[in-house]
Figure 1: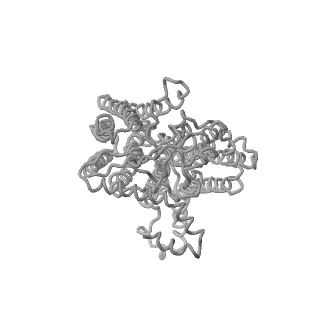
Figure 2: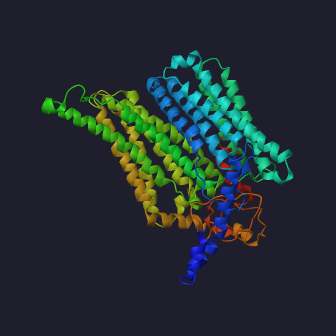
Figure 3: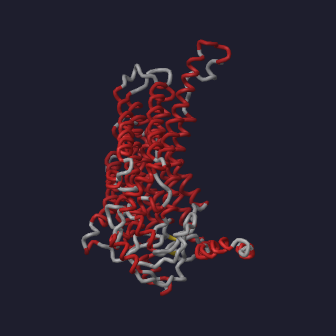
Amino acid sequence: GCLRPMAASSAKAPGRWEAVRKNDGFIAQLAARRKLAQDHAQRIYMPARALLRWGALQTPRHAEPLDLFTADLVLVAATFRLGDFLKYNVGTDDGVLGFVALGVTLLANWTHLLAYRARFEASSVVHRLADMVEGIAAAAAAHNVAPNLEALENGQLRNVVGFCIMGRLVHVLRRVELVAVHAWGKAVDRDRDTLGAALRGLKLLVLETVCLVVCLFLPTPKAIFLGLLCTWALQALLAYAPLVLSSVRWCRPRSKGVPMHVEFTVHRLSELVMIILGEGILSLVLAESPGGLEDEDVLNCGHVCLPDHLTSAASFAAGFVLLAAFTYSYFRVNPFMRHHHAVRRNSLRGLTWYLLHSVLAVALVGIGVGIKSVHPLALEGTKPKYIALLCGNAAVAVGALALQQVMHPGFRAMWRAPGLRARRLGLFALKLALGGAFLCALSFPPKETRGAALMAYAAVVGAGVAATVAAEKTKAMERALWEKADAGASPKLARRAKSAPAKAADPAQPPVVSVAPKEDDLKAEPQNDDAPTEAHDVEAASTSSSEDEEMDGADVKSAEVAGMCLGTA
């Protein structure tokens, strides 16, 4: 109906109707995507279906309300519980080790669901009940994270691991469903690529679940923490292995797998960072301010207590500035255009970018706890463990952001791009130096360093990092960098894309989503078996691949990166 007025006005504006015709394919695929979601939602049970086929357009996809409730809100509570655990146990080795181990384990509950949602449509009543069971398990696991380490030793730690196992079993059942449908289901529902991806994901999830079960029987909390960290590291290693060994013929997967909705994944991970930063804001708001008005009215005490109140207010503002600086830096460092994103351009760099979110999330939680610990000491000397907590995690966060920035264009383009090369490398070195400046705070004398001074120092350094990122992301700097990165497109890939025969689209397979249809995206796309990634035309693919690796058939797994890295494909 919305097209008729535009068609009627085509005589007055011929170019307008031509734009409608170019968008016709996008509108048709968007309608098919909505119909698929409605069919799933109206049935008690309907088998999960792949969102995308290789070479299809990506139509817009957003987080569903139930996911916001069972995943995002539970993660908010989990990060707050982890923050309390770290604050009460920051002075012990077991406390720091447990914080990192529990952090990556609870975060995996969220990332497993993201990997599934980015590839499959499953919204029937049965699938919604499974989502509720998973949400209950994640909430119960977070509930059992006691602030006191002794309480964890009395059995609560095993409860955390047990409920995490319960959540993993839900994901195992999801992969079993996919295997059953595509191996023994109706012929029209069978798909070799989906079956191969489901089998690989099932193997990794079963292995992770077995490792968690083994952790239940370890004797001490420290051994359990080490077991959880080893489980996460094993999953990351198994994600890297097929990408590193892809040049070996017998290591290559027999199927391309299921393409990932890149823009949905990128936006959901940005929402993850906002959730973690929200924990920092919550910690700052709930922190006790020294010299509060409940002790003495500032209007009555005069100039005697006014400096203390101003110092406390400055400390509070410095904490807010520090969190705002990391928020700005993350969203400026990481592009939201999929053609410039590491997940889209290269499988190894995309996987590294994805895994760095676990490091960044743990570091940001540590920064929030550091603010909550240092701000009450704004008028007196702070403690060495609080200095290390705040500034050490800030340095780790800066390092993670710097690595994420490099992952998008690649090391070679970052180093060799001739345009404004000296300025680009100088600003990058300055950003790393500012990250090292956080570590310089470890040498400050604790008793002589007031909490307000430490907060102000951290805020100034954080603001410097944000200013450096802003200088790196000017239009001239970005143009010079990406001209080099895009110029490295493989001639072999361009010839292969040009000579690839066009295949008929599969009407039974639902398409999926792009945020804003561009003219290049709306061109007819030949379905190339060696297409490097999801949802883009072959011409754009031949001009947007990185300079240091060909995105050929062996690299087609770049759209599977996000799920593989934590045990799902």
